[in-house]
Amino acid sequence: MTDSATWRAFENAVDAIPGVSDAYPLAPPAPQVKPFRFTASTNYSGLAVSVVLTLALVAQPLLCVAVLWCVGWQYGADVGVSLALVVLISRAVLVRVWGPARGDGVHRVAGFGPGTYYHGMGAAEGAPAAGGAAFADRVAAWTKTRPHYERDYEAWWVGLYRLFDFGCLLTGYEATGDGMTLLEFIFYQRLRTADPYQRRTWVEVPRYTDGEDALGGDAAGTEALACDWAFPTQDGAVAWSGATPLLIVLHGLNGGSRAMYVLDTVEKGVLDQKYVVCSLNARGFGGTPVASDGLWHGARCADLRVAIGKVLEVWDACCEAETAARGSTRRANPCYAAGFSMGALGLMQVIDRFGRPDAAWGSDFGVSADGARRLKLHGVVAISGLFNRAHETGPADAAALPALQAGRTWHPLLGASCVDSFSVHKDCILTRAAAAAKAKAAEAPQLSANGYPARQAYAPVCYATLCRAPSVRDVDVALTAPYHGFGSGVQGFRNYCESQTVAPEHMQMCPVLHLAALDDPVIPPAGHTPGVRRVVPGKHRPHKCVTYLTRSGGHLGWMQGNFFTRRNWAFMTDTLFSFLAVCGEEPCGVPSACQPSRA
Image (cartoon, rainbow, N blue to C red; front, side):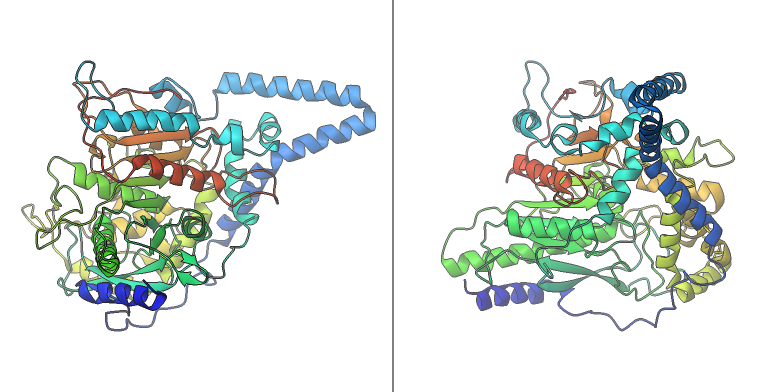
C-alpha cells in the first residue's frame, strides 16, 4: 500500500468503528481553573523538606566516599583505608542487627532473592497441559537469555554506592532506589525523532463506570480518551503490513503519552522493533479535557477495557484493509500491551477482571458485539506496578493508617503533583461534593449496569484539605474515596484500595510479566509478595503471571552505565520486547498445574 492508501485505510477504520473518531467527539468542556501550585494552600514547607531529604539520601553514599578520600589524602592512604574498613564493618553490623534493606519480606515468602523470576505455569507431573507446559518451557528458555540488570546493565559505581549506604537503615530500602529513580530522569537523552506520533484518535468510554453513581448527572453520557498512534516508516513513508505487531502503552501517574519513559518506549518500538504503537491517555491526563465530573481514579479499569477493545477493533480493520489491498491471506496479528506504574496496575486490573470466575466482562477482548472474532491481547508487561496496596492500608481493624515508605521524601512530591492535576477540576469537585452531601445511602445493595456493586458511600470533599495533602494516599483519603463513593476516612480509603487489588491466579487471558525493583522507594516489597508465593498444584489455580524482581532499579529507573553514555531505560525496554517475543502470536492454554522456577 502507498503512504496515502495507508492513511485512507486507517481513517476508514476509525470512521467505521462506533465510539472512535479523529476529533474530540464531545461538546467543549467548561474552561479549567489554573493549577493550584502557586496558591496560599501549597504545602511549601513539606515540599522543601521532601526535596532536601530525597537529595540527601541520594548523596549520602557519595559524601561518605568523598570524606574517606579526603581523610586518606590528608593523613595518608593507610589511615584512609583503615577508616574505610571501620565504616564498612560498622555498616555490615548495623544492617545485620536491623535487618537487610532490600526486600526481605519478599525473600522470606519466596525463599529466594532478587534477580530471579517466578511463574505460576507448568504442568503437573505426568499430566502436561496443552499450551501451558509449552509456554512454561518458553519462559524457562527466556530466563537463560533475558536481560539481566545487575550483570549486564547496572552502572559500575552502583556497587560502591551500595557499600557506603547508611540511609537504608532508616528508609528500609537501599539508596540505589532513590538514585536510580532520580538520575534516570535527570540524565534523560533526547529522542532520535522530533515527534514519534503521526495520528491521534479519540475513544468514547462510559462517563460513570464500575458501579459509580451519577449523583443527578447524565448517567448515559460519555467521556473521551486520547489515543496517540505511531507507525514505523521506511524512506520517509509509513511502512506496515497486516502482520505488523501492535503495542498499546499506558502511562504512569500524572503522566501522559508524552511522558519521557513512554516516548522512549514508543520510539524503540517503532524504530528498532517495527511495532505499531498506540499510547493511551487516561481521562484528564496528558493535557486532555474531561467533559463532566466523572474524574479519573485508580479503580476505573473499565476505561482501559473499553479503550483497548476499541483500539484492537481499529487495528483489526486496518489490517483487513491492508491484506485485502494486497490480495493476500490475513493471518493473526500479535497484539500486546505495556503499562508503567499507575498504568501497570490499571492494566493488571483489566486482565484480573477477565480472569475472575465471576467475570462480568466475559473472557477476553476477542469477540465483538456482532459475535465476530476480533484481535486479542497476546501478552502484557507491567513495569513498576504492584498487586495490592495493603502496605498503605494496614490491618483491617486498625484505627489509623500505617506510615508510608518514603513518606517524607517521594510521597510529598507525588502528592503535590496529584493535587496539581486535580485542581484544574476544582469547579467539578465542588459541584459533585455538594451533590454528595445530599445523597442518601441506599437501604439495600444494588448492582450497576456493568455488574459492579453500586457505590453509595459518597461524602463531601474538603478542597482545602485536598490542597494540603502531603502524599498520594492523603489525596485518595481526601478526594478519591469520598468523591467516587468508596466511603470517607480510613475505611473509605481501604475500600478504594481493595477495589484495585489484583491476584496472579486471575491472570488467565494472556501471559503477564510483572517487572519491579526491590529498592523501589515508592512501592515496598510487600506490594510484590502475591507474585512470588509458591503455588501448590491441586490447591492453587495455575496462572500466566511471571514476576521478575531486580535488586536495584528504583521506580521506573534501572539506569544503565554512567551518566552520559547509555541508552534511555534500556533494561526496561529490552526486557519488555524480549518477553513479548516469547509470548508469540498465539495465546497459550491455561495450564493445569504450576511450579516455581529459579533463575
